[in-house]
Length: 226
Ligand SMILES: Nc1ncnc2c1ncn2[C@@H]1O[C@H](COP(=O)(O)OP(=O)(O)OP(=O)(O)O)[C@@H](O)[C@H]1O
Ligand SMILES: [Mg+2]
Image 1 (cartoon, rainbow, N blue to C red):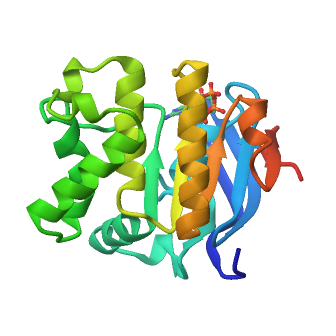
Image 2 (cartoon, rainbow, N blue to C red):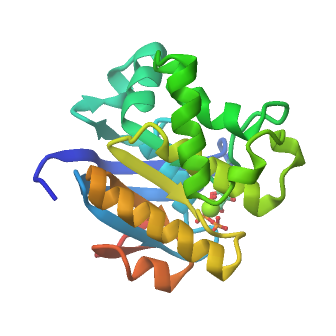
């Protein structure tokens, strides 16, 4: 682990709703993730874990506070620059993964590489290797819509990891997988963390997975506890 901070937030707050019906979800969250660091966030359902990951990934805007990714304060970036930064730095595995139903597993995983400007041949080769690593070599030509829930989840993981991002944000990455597959996925994420010094920020209800991280923090009452 090096000392450079890849992702941080200060005083991060989020309130949903309009006047009369305000739902304060996050209230002044401070967090720092260094290159290569592994952090798990736990908390009860509705405590704001997914909301926090959305804000950290620049997919939603905070009500107050700031997020700094690879040295850039997100609120100061225009949409195009923000997208480019996300593509370069982040891999996302979110609860409601945004994958393309009509595209094959291989095409979905190759997509971020193509967006980053790699050749089709090289993107497909790397996508194939990553799908093999998550145990889906036999499903590469299947359309996303033809895959099972756990297979879709693994495609989402392969896509998040294929660019070897500086940081992976994962929301319940193994939530709908059986124990054996979930363990293979943890091992894959941990080996990439070590080989490529990728930072991991995981939201999980799984205490066993959380225990494999460098630290675990609880989100409670809108605040992140030590
Ligand atoms: N777009 C929204 N508009 C209004 N309220 C929202 C919105 N998104 C989330 N919330 C509320 O914010 C709270 C936190 O939601 P969030 O999805 O972050 O919880 P979570 O900790 O990820 O829960 P789970 O473990 O069930 O996934 C919930 O009470 C939810 O109803
Ligand atoms: Mg959630």
